[in-house]
Each structure stands twice: as C-alpha cells, then as structure tokens.
Length: 104
Image (cartoon, rainbow, N blue to C red; front, side):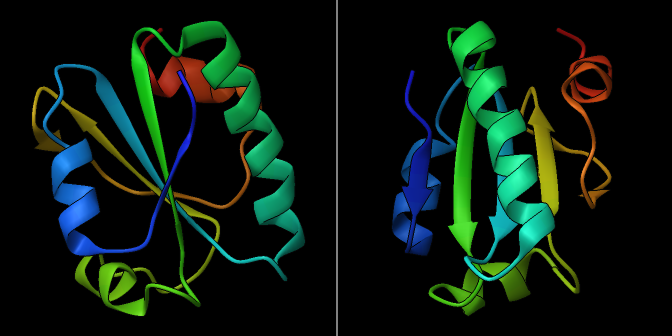
C-alpha cells in the first residue's frame, strides 16, 4: 500500500473507512524529527502495508485537521484500531517500538 497524504477532512473520512489499523501522522516539512519518523513510516508501510493504513497530514497545509486531533507538537501520530482512537504517539520512535505499539 502507499502512504496517503491527506489535505481535507473529507479525504480523511474516506480513508478511515477501513478494517485495517490506521496511523494518522501529523508532520511538517521543516520538522527534522518528522522527516526521520517519515522514514520509519515508509519502512512500516513496506513491511505491513497489507495490515496498516498510514495517513500523513501536513499541519501547515491542514491546520483544521490537526486542531481536531488536538495536535500541539509534531511529529504526532494517532492510532486507530477497530475504530477506536488510542492515545497519541508524540515524537520520534524507532520502527521496532512502533511495531510493538500497534501490535504487528
């Protein structure tokens, strides 16, 4: 699967209609930890794209979505499993830790 770059609430809503585990990652182009975590998300997508759907939201281009999810700092990710929103993942975490958090 490919990582989807979300710009509107409507797009986000469409992508959330899935049975997969969803990671919504809030980031910005100027954020170095966001770039590092982006590489982790790319690796996760390569390994588990059939089980996990990754959505990236640029906070500078879609501040209303970031506000809805109460994003105060980036990188900030929200995990949705079985339509249940879990606690945020704030900051960079390595791939192995991310896999443990999402249970793959």
